[in-house]
Image (cartoon, rainbow, N blue to C red; front, side):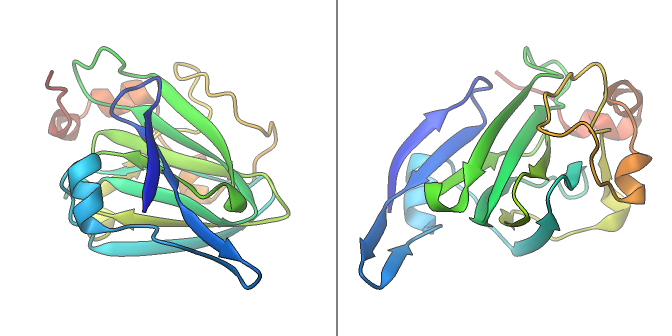
Length: 190
């Protein structure tokens, strides 16, 4: 059961606080319930669940998929991470802006970002696990990313010396992405 939904500085990105039932055994929560999500957030059909484990200072992202466009519902299940979503929608009043939030597993929070957002995170504990529900199956030929340190974005990451994959190290800038015809997949509609 969700207890609160908060729109972040970019209104299409949502912080979702879950209600946990806690007792001497631990806790139980519904991390996703379709009827409630469809009613309170937006209709979505999640088709893939990803789970990553990262050591401190690993930055994963900023990733997105244009074929097929993918929304993500991200939550930290172990440790702590700084979750980020960047608006990459052409014509959006918040194009190139980002939101970020520090989340600990015990916070019982999720971050929802619809298609048209590049997403990523930085592991801020010794070991961090992040799970994310996706509205499309992974398609490597329709997926790309934006550089974690693109100066146009100016993301205030909690590390200055990140551990990166080769793919993330070679990622393009937002300007490079916007110059590609595929960027027309994400056009902001008021």
